[in-house]
Image (tube, rainbow, N blue to C red; front, side, top):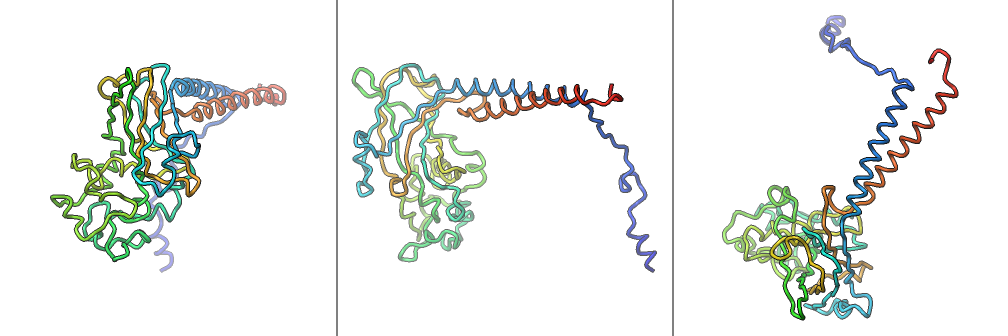
Length: 338
């Protein structure tokens, strides 16, 4: 009986199951390894030089507007008790800031990657499931229900802490302010907008939120984020989606708008500019900082010197190692290797 069981469990006598397929095993020698290291090193150095030059050609302008310095116009708004405060940030460009220009807001000392903060949301609720509008999941606590036990929609710490500073950029032309148009379409990930986040299939959208309350930190409910454009309202609002895509590091920036229209399609001309800021988001309580960033891009993306330097370092190490191996081989090679 035991022999019959072993025979039944035995794999088929084929080349595949018995591991008899032909195989090729490279025989590495100095004549292969050393030139291989040289070629890999030269390729990495070439890519690194291209990446580094491309990164150097990207223009980046960063301006801090936290309001810590007394000389800053935003200092008057740094007190959290001051609501609806507006300040301005003036700057000048000596040359054309080539477009398309991307406008970001940046935060420092802000840990979006903290685990309990990151899971404090209701994915079922954010996908438009009305059952979870009435009973949010417990992970949203302490922003699951308000003091009157009304469900919060969207619930959780992540949504509640959504960035809410606003910006308007003006070019100063002959003493008058000319509004620079912002483009806020398509700034979020395609998968977030089209797959992950969905509004309830209720018309009007406001009716889906009956019996719920907005997050405590928000000034208006989700169905009023953009009443002029239904495709940018509620849970598919571009600014909301950008915020909900968490950053990995404590110092990060997120895309706010693009400057691609009208007289500024080719970039920001040289001249004087004034950025009007609706200062709402508090950061001083946790030692954070706020900034705005203007940047353009190249074929490699945004400014990133590390990538080019990393390729240069790895390529240089490969060349150095090939040189060392060549010296060792020439000095200690065996007679039969000749």
